[in-house]
Image (cartoon, rainbow, N blue to C red):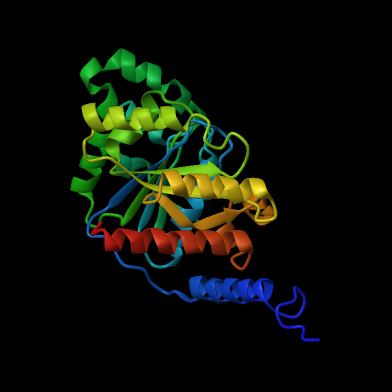
Length: 303
């Protein structure tokens, strides 16, 4: 009796493994990616917590930097988790995004180089940022509240000899003045969605908010990418979430899936991204693949 096509000796599982290995090698071996025509500014946002928002921001940033691109991460979450993962000091009193948003410093004054790559930088967040929304409201006219970060970007671009290829803004999991500022300053939105129960909960409200920003504050903003995270191919639930998202968002849903990964969870405790912590792990390879897809999609769309 022939064993061809059996789960042990061949057939779909083996073919899938061969394809996965080939893809992993391709992601590792890519040495460079296309530079965008202009700086691509992404807001990484989801009002739902625990979806891999910060993890996605720092690992996409590190993956792109590892391929030779200039990348800046703006940490707008007072918890400062993105700053931690990138190995950037963010204790209270450190020059940070708080100083930028309150007008005490320029973006150039607070940007620090990550210890991972020389072309990866971060504007850190400190706990002081938690009070910045109140200060913005109290100290500025209402028509300026939503444009503080955009104004800081404009000054930064004017002062910089070389603009970054990518800027990723990591937002808090709420729609306050900080997140609105991120939407107004960005050109693209990337939404991480976890492959779990209630994955799409709150998404309709987030999309309504993005539409409002487009209509009233930033007509140049687009929802360009949705990245599915915490994927477990062994469960029907994960597969169903992927099917649902790709059905409803065929143009925005990325092909790359980010799996559940112990290495991805461990990396921040070492003040690293998974890209530098364990580059050969499944999580690192997946974020490298996502970065490649993001860059190539942008090139195809002329971004």
